[in-house]
Amino acid sequence: MQPHHLRARALCVALATLFTTLCLPAQADHDDQATQSRAAISADGAWLREPPPGAPVAGAFLTLRNAGAAPRKIVALRSPLAAQVQIHEMKMVDGQMRMRELADPTVPAHGQLAMAPGGTHLMFMGLTRLPKAGETVPLSIRFDDGSQLELLLPVRADAAPASPPDAMSGHHHG
Ligand SMILES: [Cu+2]
Image 1 (cartoon, rainbow, N blue to C red):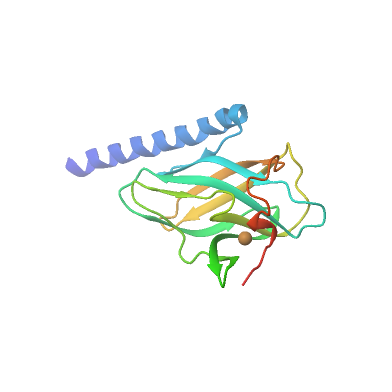
Image 2 (image 1 turned 30 degrees about the vertical axis):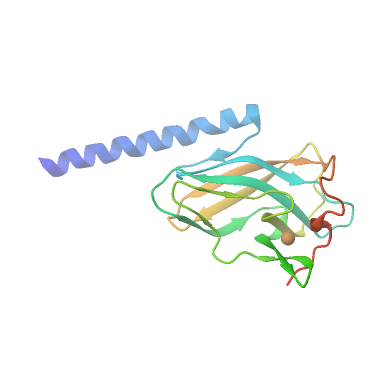
């Protein structure tokens, strides 16, 4: 009898997960925040900086929080807006702020991975078109446990550059 019980419980969990997944998009329409699936990871404060005309890249920012007891590694980032999406970190090299791809981006257990202007950020590279302030851009983040986060990033103009000259405008890659 024991295996039977276990199976029934597993089904319950599966249905609960499905229900949550089905419910969330409606909510997302209201607050244009993250739509998330079964991951223990959630995202907030997500936005994409409206790039200047002709820019090949756009920066985006968000905070990923991990409610789980295991660290979650990001294994893939995808958006219809860009040929490639990477996570970059800022490093001071020879007195110059440079950015480079973050190796093994991970959201620590019961911790967070914060991305904000001037620091670690998402870089949309090879833009397929120029996003405009007011629209939203889809981004999907896949983790090493197979879970996936589907986000809609509002595009915002960078109203007040906090620290001119903004390190982001340099865009030194490599
Ligand atoms: Cu970058």
